[in-house]
Image 1: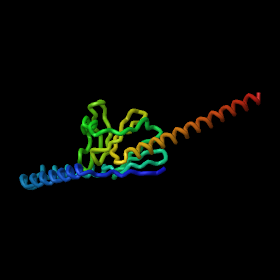
Image 2: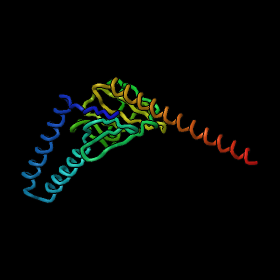
Image 3: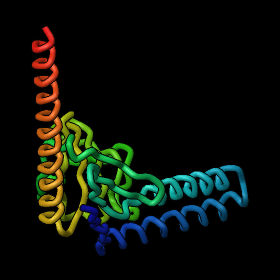
Image 4: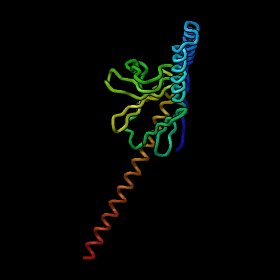
Length: 193
């Protein structure tokens, strides 16, 4: 059951990304003109380029549901969540997200991704979103929350619920087989005596 959901960028994210680039270029040009090639302008441009490159490498691309894992694929890395460790999955309204403050995250530069602090629950949350809408919250058995944006959230929820059901059925089957083998081993020992 391999299926994937692509992240879609909305107009707000495109506008914020363009504004961020404009601010970076204007800031770099102003420093270059004011300091005439000094150390400070070179330092600023290098810092902005390094941060931009790191942020661009972390842009979320798609959510893939494989046999036993849910993968959130970014440009340079992949976050894997074992579907057997998913405790709950639910849709989150946009108004509930107003309590999120970025800690080490991008807030509109090619999307919203990274670590955010949730003032309602007083905990950190990992967000992978290319738009500030259509949120789905995935909570694992360790109470670690991951929020993704997915335009087809109901289909994502159904697929993960089905994967959880298949995983639970396989675990029950494996447990039943182990119990049967242990029972057969016990019976063979008692017959040998």
